[in-house]
Length: 432
Image (cartoon, rainbow, N blue to C red; front, side):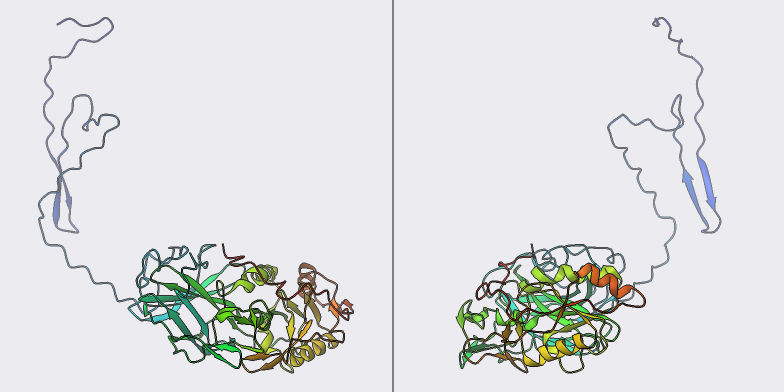
């Protein structure tokens, strides 16, 4: 046999086959035989580049394995093992899964253990969907921690789910429902010029046990893909020694055009409006456009915070507050609201209104009704003095010890009026 120069001649010596090796596992009482096939020049079979090795055939069973204990059932509302790190994308459970959340039985609801933080955009709705595809409201504007509220939901879909997110520096998923049967509620009524859905039937009850104080969005997801928000505030029982963040819900409702009528003449002006109806748009346009980022900044600052809505400004509600911040469009004040803010300023609290026109319009607040006798009048006297500091400077002052006295500027007698509805966010603004 001819060989090329430099190549060694093949050896005629025969390589004896290697015996099969046996590895005994005394703990299991079984023998595992490892057959090592001899290959000239190496101890394992060669695999051509770019190809996958063929898996070896499984040996026949030598003994029956002991049965594996079944996993315990997951409690309603709990996250099953292995799913805790799974993020929630826009519209998940609606457009994606369209079914019950893992770990929740049909119709079951409950808290999410550990107040699971979610991906940055997980709280956002995927799409508003068609007209009346899903919409709803809460029978309470705010609740104390541990109190309950009801959701009244109307949908054209066969079913829907609800999730509650605490908004802040990092949104947290704190509660979710199981699958809820969908129902198209009755058409809204117009009573004395006011559009109301107070006759709707409750869809489910939400228990806020374990929820922290703060601003929340309940995301409603129809099984057909549409979504809306229902805002709810878990209010603080005391403002003493804290910076109070206000949700300007009276202004949200005054500009709410759901049903075609509002108080601000954006649609057909109504003499009164009610919280017993959904918000138009995404359901939380004013919060996402004007207030959400300020809440996140405040929570990142480390300042002690309290949370209230404008309807919670009753006598004594702001007693002992370090500061009061209204981050959103806050134009509609009742006499009780104005008096509570004025007293807080007189007691030394910094008052900060981050958008122009705060408190310019006088309203009457009667439970869940907001009313104006004729066109909503402007206040003819100056409002409470407000601080000259911006949000960041005010929060830094609140974390200093001891806190210095307030820096106040007198409020102007009249604020610039840019017309009815000028402060209304664009449709869907802040939710994309």
